[in-house]
Structure formats: C-alpha cells, structure tokens
Length: 110
Length: 418
Image (cartoon, rainbow over all chains, first blue to last red; front, side, top):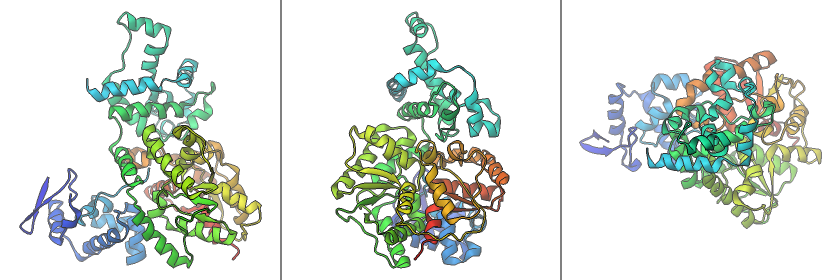
C-alpha cells in the first residue's frame, strides 16, 4: 500500500502505517487525516508533535495509557485524559495519532 | 488441509503427556470449573466452561490414548481433530482464558486445567491459530528482547529521567552485585515510578544491585502464546546475563507471569538449575523489612484494598508478603471478598491484554472486579503487576468508577524513613 502526499509516494503497511519512518513529513499527516475525514487543527498538531518527540527520545510508540499520562504531564491535566484525546482522534489516540505522526503501531504489554 | 495444520496436530500430540492424559481420564464432568471462571460467571455462556475450552485436545487424546478411541480409529471410525476445530476454538483458548488458574484451584479431582490450556496453546500457536497481537509481541520479544519493542535505548531514556528525579545513580552492568533486577516493558515505558521506587528503597536498605544491559526484560511472551522454544530463549538470555555478572539473585518485578516464567518454569525450560536464586520483589521487600533494613513509617489513613495478581498468588505462591508489607504502611487495609489465592483476575492476564479483538469481552467481564470493589467499599486499590494496573484502570474508566490504583512498591517507597 502507499499514499501520495506533496507530490511524492510514501509506502505504508497493510494497516496504513508508514513503512519507512524516516520519510515522514507534515504533508503525510494531512493526507492521512483527510482520508479519515479529519481536518488537523493546532490541537491535533500538538499531539502529533508530542508523539514525534516522544519517539525520538524513547524509540517506541506509546500505548494510549502512556500517551494520556505523558500528555498530562507535558501539556496539562485537562489534556491528559482519554476523553480529550479520543475527541481529537476518534479511531484511538494511540493508533490513529501514531499513524499520522509516522510512528509504528503502538503495542500493549502481554 | 494446510501444512501448518498438520504441524499443529503433531504439536498437540506432543503435548499429550502423562499429566494431560491422566487429567482427561480423571475428569468427572462436574462443571465446577465453570463457576470458577470469570468469563462464565460474568456472561453465563457455557462455552466458557474451562474444560470445554479443551475439547480439541480432548478429541485427540481420546483417539490417541484411550482403548476405545484407538480401536475406533483403527476401524476408521470416531471423530478426528479437524482444522475447523482450531478455527472454532481459537477465541475460546486465547480471548476467554487469562490463564488465571482459578479453575485449577476448584477442580475436585485436582486437574490443572490451566496447565492443559497452556499446553493446548502450544499446538494452536504452531498451527497458526493465535491472535495477531500476541504473535507480534512474540516476534518483538525475540527481535528486541521486549514484547512492546522496548530497546536498551528506551530503558536508558527512562533511567536518565529517573536519575534526574531522584539524584541517584542507577547501576548498570555492575559486576559482582548481589541482585540483578528485571523490569517489565510496561514498567519501563509507563511506570518509571516503579524503577524510581526500587532505586530509592535499595539505596535506603543498602542493597547491592544492578541492571543488565543485555537482559532487563522480565516478561516472557513465549509462556503467554504457548511456545516453549521462545520461552526458553527468553529465559536463557536472563540466565546468561546473570551468570556473566556473577549475581547471587535475580529479582522478578511487579509483574504477574514473569515470576512464574523464570522462577517456576525457567530451570525446566533451559534444562538445568540456575547458579543464582530468583526472588519476587515483594518477597525481597518483606525480607528486607523483617531484617530491619527497610524502615517504614505508618501514616496512611485512607482505606485500602489489595488486588492479588493471579500469577503471583496462585502460581507464584507469594500470598502473605504483600499483606505484611501493606499492613505496615496502611492503618485501614481491608480485604476484598475472595482475596488471596482465590482472587478474581483483572481480565487481562495470559496475553489477553495484547489481544485487540478480546477487548470488548475483557471489559464485559470486569463486572466481577467491580463487584468485589463495591462490596469492599474502598476507593484505593493496591496491586503489584503493571499489566493488572493498566487493565484495572481501563475497567475503572469504562465503568466510570472512582477508584485509584497504586503499586505496592511505590506505596512503600513513599513511606520510607529517610
């Protein structure tokens, strides 16, 4: 599978996550969001940018609980809950936001 | 019929050991195991009766190991195990069983039903009938050493935050330390407070400890999915690192199945005894306290209850230690009904939490834990497993309950006499 953004082709896996994480650019998130009928606002970008920074440091895509906790710590308690994040990313803040941010699919414990 | 199906049948035959055979022939069909199973009691669906989840294995046992079964098979009669059985039973085996072990506790003839389900999972996994999330977790465990894909870089990032917050140095690869500490991935990424608490408690109690950069992961997805090669490989990594560092003890963290995996199954998986001892963190903390090295002050007035992680109490045997520890910092500790070895599972053990399609059912059966909490009437629940903690928090949020979940080790660290 692949998506077109900014005149370029980006390869994705069968669930729509970027195959090559290094290729990501903001246009990728815009196109993926449009495909999910979402328009990205500054609130969305706040989370997407947060995810990219988190990945840069920890080399792992955070699961929903990790994300809500970390967002709460960084962006304030009123944003650090799953209700707020689900409102922004209806298909699941972990899965959908990580996909937009060019991260791999988040994983849970066993 | 596919090739993997044939391999699955062969794998199932290999699982029919003396224990499994005697368990099947001892079963008196009483159905008591149903009442012990969270998935049956909360849904009333008889398919969730634990022994029924073993029908595919039972079919093969009858044909391979019983007189009438063998006679029938030689005459071309009797039921054969089919690929459809794998397809039909996959969700029963993986989604509606958390390997919690409650059914094994109540079986009047002493059948270890949980052990049998673990065995049956071996065959399902070989035949290719295992949930995607668990297969991926096993792949990541082999590749990165962690089911969640945590690498040493992730751990280092977490450790540097912990060092900054505590002002302590976390020892890594310290040759000749007494204790080598393991963590679960969930603790590394979601509960760094646990690592912080360990560092502070060990410092205060004067424990010589280290983390190994080669083996820090405690969880074992091989055990969960039912694949003894993966399980043995993961245990082997810990053993090698511990023996290289020359430690006397390996500390299993606040994780349920990690302790069972390394303490009780580990030596059998690698085929020899370890050159070190394995202790669960709660055992170690209780020991430190009884030796007077862990000094605590009792100040907590808030009523608290304890959620026993299944693998720690039932299969691990760590029952009294958390109670001694909790009583020393909480003045109002109240037990839940069915506490201790008969406690009810959070619903996310046995790999269920990594199994996306099981989520709805998992939340449905959380009603049991909710009832236990309602009956106890306490809003603070202490536990000792990061996976339980996540699952409990999800259930609490789903049912809009007002319960706080905290870790016992963290609670103790908050009550250290500095």
